[in-house]
Length: 339
Image (tube, rainbow, N blue to C red; front, top):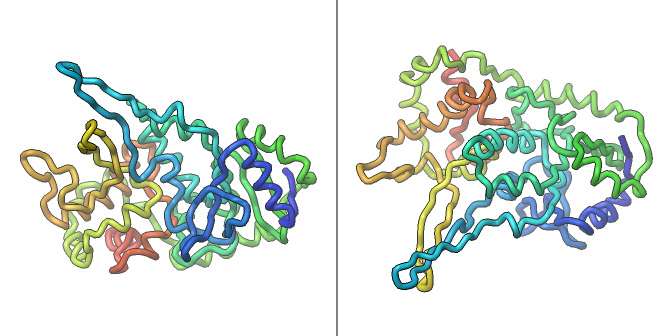
């Protein structure tokens, strides 16, 4: 493990960005998001949750995937695959909940058939995770066995304590990057006591005792048919905010549009909370707000874990708790259906 003085943090960013694009939590117009670092950027490593998760660096909000032209009787397909264009990049300051969410997205996009657009970004992206010590009251990552004080995921784990950054590589890619920043650091045998003390803070959070024990395949039909759904969905606006700020939501739509010169096929994020989601020629399979609301939470709490070795499609980041305009979120659903 290495220790780097916070006084050298700009040097650290410079060394990393010499060989790759560096994304950091940067504040612009009052919002903090993962943005390409440049000297003079307002870096906010103290911000626990960025407005948008780093998911968009691997699964962009929108991207072109192909284009088509006609020449006489021929249809010419223009490959717009991004494999050749993606260069190495690092994402510094990823919290444990967001880092874990990428592992969940791997289960979706790296399962057969592999999504090569996502795959190439994962292969070229280095995740530098940062531990949390003073979480937001909306955080509930511990419910999903995530230790935010000692993240298990990423290529490098860091701790910002007493004006020092403690740096620990945990993958081969992490080791290679660590070799480049050795001159900025000194060796450290252990972490400060503050790291252990922070665990007590998490145990006192409002949602620290959230239980998921009743969400199993054995209770699927009971949960599905619960009369609670009608009560819960009443306030939902179907705005889709929860899906667009969620680090694990992965639904997308594919559409073609005419540029005048060619037809471009693109995909963009979509939301299961919308009435036209999965709209087909014969109509929509979920025609009511209740059905759409229920689908979202049944998927996260029962369907997804049933098909992915018990991994829930939520990491307790708390963004939906903070951002839902009517304060309807996964916490309320869990508590309403836990009996």
